[in-house]
Image (cartoon, rainbow, N blue to C red; front, top):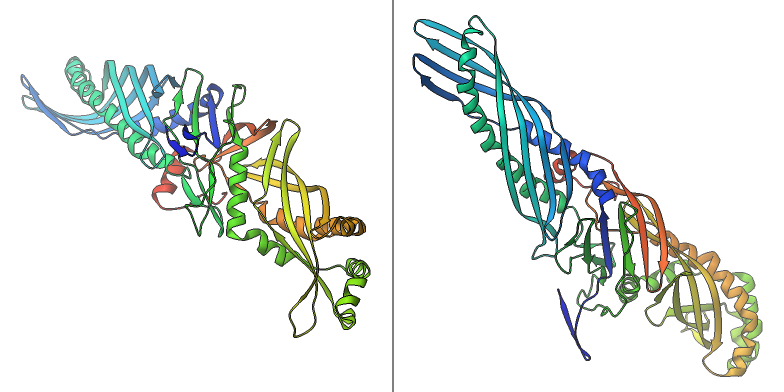
Length: 479
């Protein structure tokens, strides 16, 4: 577990993001896993076999698996990872024979069936050096109880009696091929799928996000729990980040397929990084347009100030300059989530061709309701201005004079600034899930210090297609 050193000592870094996959989630994966394993076993190639038994000389080639009937199960292996098990199943094969007996020569097809196929495979899950979920090792044991063969051709019945000899060799060779095929599927192909989970990646031109695992996954009989750092960072200064003092999210439920838990730190690190990256400043510059009625109200409010400075300034337009003075902060309670923002507001006169003249400076405090939602595997937030107040930086008397401005300023923010912010953040950020797998039927719950999103899972495409797309360098267009 990663430790952080602070002025108060050393402590284990709590996760900003946690994911729990339950037995219900594993049930959804079973069908896809079985299909994937069947495809891998179907691609098994077997060498040509030549031999001699008494007066018989034989050659067996072009071995093909034509059908698999697997009875399989996928479950959690406590403290290790995942267990994939096949019991009492069958595999049908077809291969060509050439047999010479004395002066008789015969060739034809052999249909064989391997019965009592049993496979026991354990996937060992770890956090690798980059903080990525990875299969580090595969423990595999496979055996076939018996094998039968049916001959065709001129002397098909005559050769039935050597079927036991041939199928014994075939059973031995097939036994030796199963585990290497599954080892390759797990260590190479499934790890390719796991590499589509974002670890440290750019979100946009301002920030990136760090989803590296803090420790190895915790596996019990009922769940797989993963602790991710869940930290945003400024792309221009990746080392300037917040220290995580937030509460550790707690997931107690098992009813849904998957649970995503995010602490206040997850959101605060994003707000901090966007503040450092200058996004708020840019959005305010892009969105701010002074309504005519607000300008008239400001001119009336600061008439005395203008007259005292220079009566000629009355002819020039007024402007408001908004600046976020500190990183916004999030608060999550059982009643919902909110974001607090502090701004400095300057009232300016803009004489043409001359520097702006400051009439006043005030502090604006805003509190936004933050509604968290999920779509696919993207987490998004929608903000709604709930509370707003302004007060003077000069005197309490001026603060009283600013009361008539609160309504128009709040309306201005709601009409111009807030929609632009929501339009920018509506795309959201990807959560740490592989390509091709999405959240559906999400339910968001708010707790003190963190949120939990419970959901079911949906495969948009099969495991094979996802892996092939990764190997070809294609990206998931839905992200």
